Length: 484
Ligand code: NAD
Image: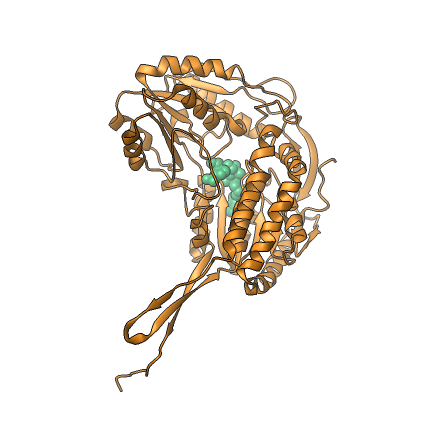
C-alpha cells in the first residue's frame, strides 16, 4: 500500500508496533481505496509513550529556550522542504485538494513551529519588588507531559499547533491523531527527531476515542489539548477536570457572517465561499449562517450562484481542483441527512444538494436560501459544504440572531461603515472575529472559541499561557519575624 507507514506508532524516537491493537483502515476519500492500515494503541504502547515522554521532558526543560527554539525552527525548515511530499500524504489522508494542502497544511504547521521556536528564548518570569526591599520573582515553568488529540480535517496543522507551543515551553507531548487521518503526525515525529529533538519528546500513538480517554485519565499527564466536536470536548474536559489538569478545547461552531447593504459584494461572496466550501466545508470556524441584508439578498444570491459554477470538483491530486471529496462515507451521509432536513423544513435549494455518483465521497457544494433561525440546518453544526443564507432588516436584530446559538467560535461582518463594523464585533459572542474577510488564522493571532466552542487559545503569545505555569519565589533580604 502506497502510504503504509513503517509502523503504527512513533514512541521514544522510533516507529513501533503492537498488532494486537484494533485495526484502523486508512481510506483515500477520492476513490474509497485502502491506502494503509495501522493499529490502535494497546495499553503497553500507551505506557511506553508516557514513560518515554516523562524522561525526555525532564532533559528538554533543562535546555535554554534558545536551544529548544533552534530545534523547532529546524523542524519548520524541514517541513517546508518536504511540503510537497507532506501535502500529498495529507491529500490522500483527508481528500482535500492538493491546491489547498500545498499552502494550508504543512505550511501552516511550519509557521507554528517557526513562530514558537522564535518565542522559546524570550520566555521569562518577572521581578516584583515588595515591602521592605524584599522581592518576588516568577519562573515560567513547563507543565510536564501534555496530550494532544486531533480532529481529521487539518491533521498535520493540528499536530503542529499543539506541539509547537508545548515544546517551546519545555513540555513533552503525546499526540493521538484522529483515527480517520493517522498518517501525517508520524511524519512530524520523524521530522522533529531529524531536527534534533530528543527521543520521547514528541510521540504519536494511534487509536480511537478510548486511547484518547486513557491518556487524558492518566495521572502522569499534566495537560490535554483537544480539537474535536462538542460532545467529545465535554467528555475530555470532564475527565481533565477530575484530575485538575490544564485543558484547551478547540471545538465546533455554527458561525455567523453578516453582510450589510454597504458591503463590497464581490468580497462578501468570496468570504462566504471560503467560509463554507474550503476543505469541502469541513472547517470548525466556517460561516455556515450567512445573514444578508434583505435589500441585497437577490443580487448576493445571483452573484454567488454564478461563482458556484466555477468550482472545480474532481481529482484532489490535480492542482486545478478546488473541491475534493468529503473525508469519509460517514461524513457525507451526515451532510446529506442535513440537506434532506433543509428541504423538508422548507429552505430553498439554490445550488448543489446531491451526492456525486461514482467512486469517492463527493458531494455537490450546496447553498440554501430562505433559511430561518429555527431550521435544523441553521442550528446544528453540519461539518460539510452546506451554506445557509438568511436575511435580516436591522443591525440590532441580526446581531441578536447571530448570537442566539450555544456555539461561539467565529463571527464576521462585511460593511463599509467602520463604526458599525467595530460596534458589531464588540457585540459578537465569538472568540475569533473578522471584519471584511473570513477564516484567516495567522499564527501570530490567538484562535479559539467562547461558549460551547471551547476554552483556551491556540497560536500567538496567548498559547504560552496554556502550556506553562508560573512559580512565585519570595526572596527575603532581612530578618524573618515571628510572633513568638
Ligand atoms: P471528534 O470529536 O469525533 O474526535 C476528535 C478526536 O477526539 C479524535 O481523535 C477522537 O478519536 C478523539 N476522541 C473521541 N472520543 C474521545 C474520548 N472520550 N476521549 C478522548 N478522545 C476522544 O471530532 P472529529 O469528527 O474528528 O472532528 C470534527 C469536529 O472537530 C467538528 O465538531 C469540528 O468543528 C471540530 N473541530 C474544531 C476545531 C477548532 O479548532 N475549534 C478545528 C477542527 C475541527
